[in-house]
Length: 420
Image (cartoon, rainbow, N blue to C red; front, side, top):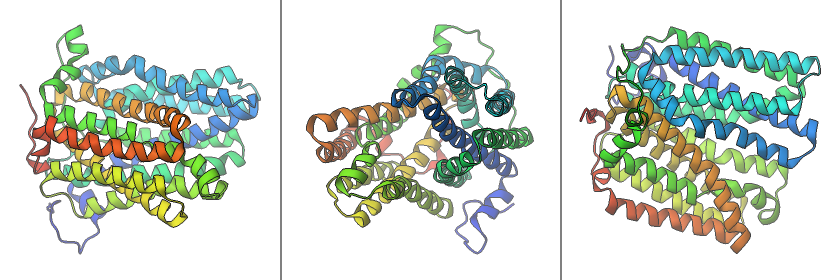
């Protein structure tokens, strides 16, 4: 078996990782196609909702319909992930996703899909993702050793970013062939993800035998309070995204600051994802060897500086470069946080900790857009983006003092689960 941490670049990185980790291929296919299908479906639902209602408010309600189930089910889904067979839970969720997407295709083809039904189906998808996500996040540490994890996580992140780049454009192209065809394509994507998940060979996990109680339900919160480094990593990402929400202001920059129009907006939107893709590919080829804590804080600092540069930029080239650097810095932080969260958490607690992590990520994205919008209304768009970048730098400095154990984090492959 080849050493996944070898610096020998004569073999393609992906082939090396796939040969070293037999279940990595079905994991990557399942996660990527599931994410891609969800992106395509989100675009189709938004287009169809607006076509049926001609209401901007209706589009806003779609995001709320997906977020509220996750908020309501986060602690329950985490407990379920730590109590029952995680692979089976994901298989059940993906099976229902295939059924729902197929039903949406049939209902659209027959002209029977009303706006209220779209809200209900989106809420169902939100509920399914709240159970599927925490379980799916536990798969990688169950198929990769700690030494293999950073490279595998970087490959997973690169494919996820690829799905993020392709998904919206593909959704628009497929929708041009008809919403029913778009939903049918999503159903096929979820079906292949289901087949790939079924092929996974995970290390045995019997599930927790303790009955459901308030203590077990909120066990993820209690564990994070005990592990200060994990709490610091997750909360650092929360506040960095919350304050540095430059992407929420891209339509304003494209229209009023850079005067680019729709094509320029598409370029700006793609830039962070392209930067993140390049960053994750670099990490896949050159996994982090040490100084993970300082590198994580440095990446958050670069994220803040890139946000400030974007905020003051009136040049398309500089704006695109700053957004690409922002995306690359963000993915470094994501890979380190993901490795720390999964490797330091005991297997019986991973579902609940992953659920809390998902809630933090979802909240930071949603609240970050709200914060950016409100601040921009109060002090102006450019000032709001610059203030967010400065706030990110301040948070990074404060977190170094508040979470010294996170700053001292060195090698990711030496992280051991905290069974205490």
